Amino acid sequence: MIRKKPSFTRDYIVRPLLVLLLLAAHGTALLSCYTAPVTGRSQVILLSQSEENQMGVAAFQEVLKTEKISTNAKYNQAVTDVGMRIAAVADTPAYKWDFKVIEDNEQINAFALPGGKVAVYTGILPVAETEAGLATVMAHEVAHVAARHGGERISTDILAQIGAMGVSAALGGSDPYISEAVMQAYGIGVTVGGILPFTRAQEAEADHIGLIYMAKAGYDPREAIAFWERMDAANKGKPQPPEFLSTHPGYGSRVNNLKQWLPEAIPHYEKAQKAPNNPIAK
Image 1 (tube, rainbow, N blue to C red):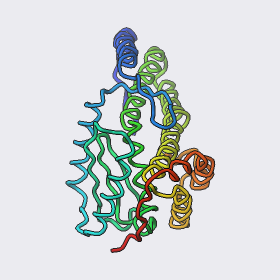
Image 2 (image 1 turned 120 degrees about the vertical axis):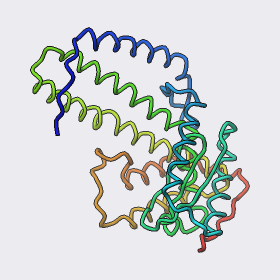
Image 3 (image 1 turned 120 degrees about the horizontal axis):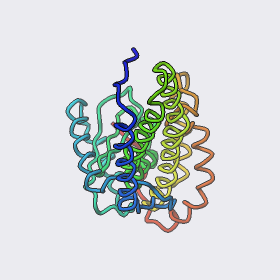
């Protein structure tokens, strides 16, 4: 359903827009002096770390109200042990790490929220098979938190909204149907051309950082390739969006990337105290 746009004057839109742009620029200067670990990529983050962490904690509490937390002691112990071992090498003293297992065998997934909150669905554990496979998952999620990807995504959304306001202001005197069409095109352009590839880049970066973290924690980084090959097999036959429309790299792309990063990871693994690699038993 297409809703009518409010009838604002151009000045009414442009003046707040200019204020927002100035605030964004000011905030960027103050808060974006952050560099992603391992990759060294410069990031634009408009939130303070404490604000980001508070949002993550609140969101995690809401998730836990609606999900069934697993009572499987072995699953919980494995996820906590591997997660804490990964977190110990991630140099993130500001986070209070909390690892949960959610009982859902249909979800082959895991997620992380700012502040060190990580959840793993039971459906991914058979694909992990061993603690090294689980380390691939946990290191990827810890990497998202350590690289502040949550705050970065929120900041990207804020800047995208500011850009949308600018387009709306520029079209203030246009035919409403033309304005609607252009706004829709702008939305598609931002989503496909900007936001989704950007989050794919974050996913790839989490793979890269996670590979180094699991190696430093004593898990063989070559196991990450085997894990993603199993993930590919586990998802065969399920509908997948084209990679350019997905927020995650395709499995083939992930494996190829990991192979390129292995020479960087192996020396860390060779220096590390080797971690246990037990099967993940029920």
